[in-house]
Length: 422
Ligand SMILES: Cc1ncc(COP(=O)(O)O)c(C=O)c1O
Ligand SMILES: [Zn+2]
Image (cartoon, rainbow, N blue to C red; front, side, top):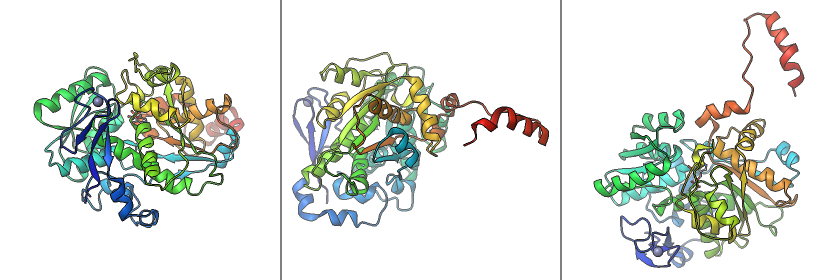
C-alpha cells in the first residue's frame, strides 16, 4: 500500500501525478514536494502504532514515507537513522541553556545525515526498477548513495569534485560505486550529473533535484518529535533546531517532516528551524537577510566542504523553513567552524566542519540573545569528524613527539601537558 499521491511544485503550485522520472517542476524548475495521502495514513495509523514499532532505524516511519519497503534486512540500508541524542551537561552549562540536545548524525552507517536521503532514494530506485542511480556530491551524499546502494546490490555512479576530502572518496570507492572525479566544483558536477542522467537514462539522486531526498531527510524530524519533543519539559516553548545549510535540502526536509506531523494532527507546536551557513558560502542566508526568496549564486570558498555550494538547489524551501517556523539564518566564520570542532570534541563528539557549523551558529545565537536560556535547543551534527581530518587538525595543536624514555616523557609533561590537564 503506498501513500504516495504525486508531486506539487513548491513555487508555481502545479501538481503532477506519481510518475517515475520526475525531478524539478517541468514548468518553472521549482522543487517538487511529495504529496502524501494523509487521510489514508490517519485512517490506518495512530501515534501509538508508529512509536511501538520495533525497528530502530528510519524505517520505523515507513507508513509516513512515499516508498515501499526496499528489503535488505540485516544490511546497513536497514540501519540508517535512529541516531543517538546526547545531552552533555557541560555544554549546556557553557551555553547557559536549560535544555540542549545534540543529535549525532555522524553515527549513521556511512557517517553522515545523507544516509537518510540515500536510503529512501535507493528504495525508490528499486521500486521503479532503475538500473543505475547517479548523483553529484560534495562527498557525503556520494558516500551515502554508494553505501546504501552497495547494501542491496544497486549499481551507482558518483560525480564529485576532485578536491573532495580523501576519506569521502575512499568510502565511495570501497563501497564499490563507479566514481568519477570532476576537475571543477560541486556545482559543475551537479550540472554534469543531470546531463549524464538524461543521456544514459540513469535515475538521478541529486540533492534538491530528486524530490525523494527530502522525504528521507524528514525522518530526522520524526525522530526529534518522537524522542525529544514528546519528552520536553517546556512543551509550550517551541524546540529550536539548529542545522547547517548547503543546498538547503536537510532544512527543507526537516520542515517537511514537521509539517507532515502537524497535518496528521500528531504534533501541535512547530519547532523553530535555524539554518547556519559559512560566511563564505551564504547564498541562502543572504536571501533570508534581504527578506527575499531570490537565491543569488555566490562564489563559495568555505573550508566546510559539505556546505560549499555556489547555487543552492533547494534554496527557496530552505529560506521558507526558517521564515515559516519563526526561526532564522545565521552565518559564521570559518575560524568559528574550526573552533566548534574542538568545542564539541571536548565532550566526546567528533564533528566534520559542516557539523560543527550548526553548533557555531548556536553559540552566536546565544551570544546575540536570539536564543534565550529557556529556549529548548537541539543541534544536529550532520557528519562525523573522521570524514575530514585535515580540517580537524586545524582545530588542535599537533601532539608532541618524544624519545621513548621516561625522562623525555616527564620533561614533556612538565613543559607542555601539566597546565592543560583537566
Ligand atoms: C555533513 C553535512 N552537513 C550539512 C550538509 C548540508 O545539507 P544541504 O546541502 O541539504 O543543505 C551536508 C550536505 O552535503 C553535509 O554532508
Ligand atoms: Zn513549478
